[in-house]
Every structure is written in structure tokens, then in C-alpha cells.
Length: 196
Image (cartoon, rainbow, N blue to C red):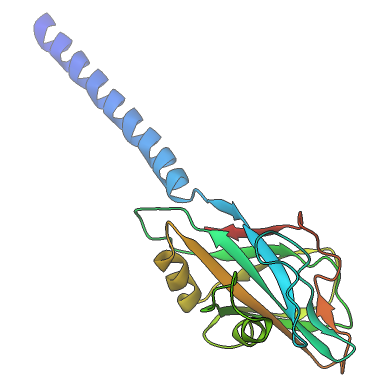
């Protein structure tokens, strides 16, 4: 009888230990699945319709909109981590850093040009055309952080760029006739993050 009770107690303890482990895994695994990766921009700058590129290699001012009838578009580049598993969502988190004559609507486009060597005219065209990767509307407040969720094409582009670099062209439209835009006070240290 004593031997049977002892075996029962051991079995009961094993069962309790197993249940405790299952509980720990149930807590840990969802947390791991929800872990995010934040990537800072590797380079970013504006290009004008009249033919000037602010910077091709580092983070700079990314004013996007219009000044006196001259159009401004911009780009943001990221080094995408070399993940073996495909990312399931992607968001660009930016600080508006100066909004002029809003509300402004912002669109992200794919970039096919070589930013280092393409002409300003080619870059200006590329940054405002092609496949739309994400949008945000109604930007009207300076110095606030906004999230631009990438659409299915945007997420696919990010996954295709794993282990390499991806660039987004940025264009803005507004009902204002001129001098509208966003990011007017942006600098090299402005928040421009890719959240994966």
C-alpha cells in the first residue's frame, strides 16, 4: 500500500511539473512571436523637380511637397535584416517634423533607380510613380510620430529585400496650390524607422 501511494505521489508530482512547463511555454511563445525588429534608416534625402539631389549616401532633410512651384520628393532607405522567416507586417514610423499648409496626403512608392548614380530628373520621377507600397492621409500636425502601414505589395518588397537594402520613394499631394509639404524641419537624426 505504501509503495502504491509513493508511486501515486511521484506521478502526481510529474504531472504538476509538466503542467507548469506547459504554462510557461504558453506564456513565452506568444511573446516571442510578437517580438518586433526596429530598423533605423540608412539614408534619406529630398530631390527637386528642378534637378537637385540633397544627399545620396546619408540621412538628411527629407522635405516633401512644394516650394514656390518647385516640387520636392524624397526617399528613405533601410538595411533589411537577413531573416530566414518572412516578416508578417511592416510599418514605417516617422516624425512629421514640420507640416506646411496641410492636410497633406503621403504616398510611398517602390524605387527602381540606383540612387547613387541616377540623375535628379530620373529620381524625381521614380520617387512619385510605380507601385504604391503604402499611404497615409490628412497629415496636418508638425512634430508628431505617425505610422504608415505597408500594404501587401510593400510587405512583399520588404521580404524580397531581406539581407539587402530597400528604398521607398515619398510623394505628397495637397489641396494647397503651393508651399505645402511635410518634413520641412527634418534632419539626419529625425525618426525614420522600419518596424518589422
